[in-house]
Image 1 (cartoon, one colour):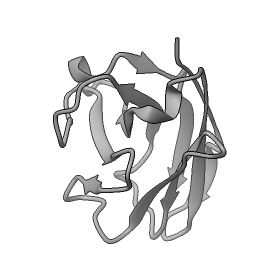
Image 2: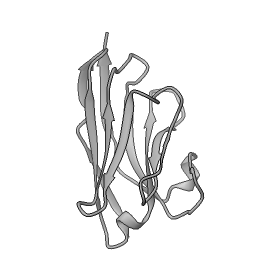
Image 3: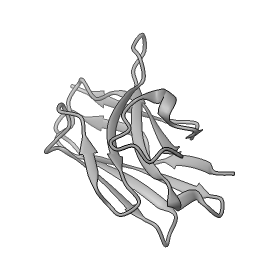
Length: 124
């Protein structure tokens, strides 16, 4: 079984930076491709960035060049560094892991494991 716990959410001004982290547990946790999703009020959950076990990365267009996804398989962590944040970035950010080998996996049903989410707020 895989468990995921996010941390690092909070309040940031537009143009600022924030880093959210995901701590995984479970013997097979870091054998999976993983991703960050986000969900703003009244919207569907959407993929932000994804990363394979070996480090290949995917970004949604609106964050490419501003956000960086990374993982450390030895430390059982996955991070999302968010720079130059805008008022379109506020949401609850979720860490997720998929048992599928399909790449990139960018849809919610493709992910079997989810964290509880961490809230990110951006002020203008």
